[in-house]
Image (cartoon, rainbow, N blue to C red; front, side):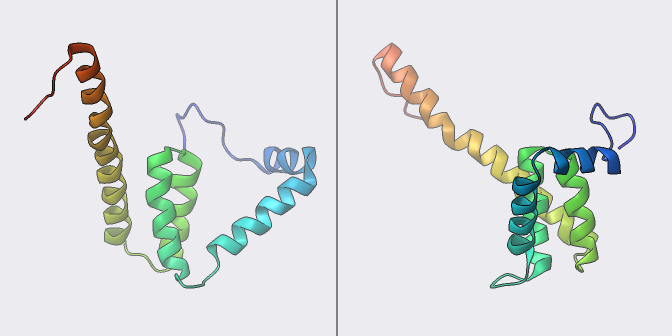
Length: 116
């Protein structure tokens, strides 16, 4: 992630994060391992979900890490890109769905319905 406003993940920063609150860090790592372990969903599917969610939450570290993990778990480049497109649709769909709130607010201001 060169030319990024985000610092690179270095062993020193990772160690500092862990050492500042070691019990919580260990609990989070255990939780993460459990979440991504195969269960009703296989590991590849879970990583594809993570790729999509990472794009919605817009975490560059998660995008990088989970894209690599998805590939390592057998996801094709096409599957990864399709997961990203699902995320894009869901993000856009959320804005579209929430337009009802704006229309309702306009009804309150103008006292009329907006029938399309």
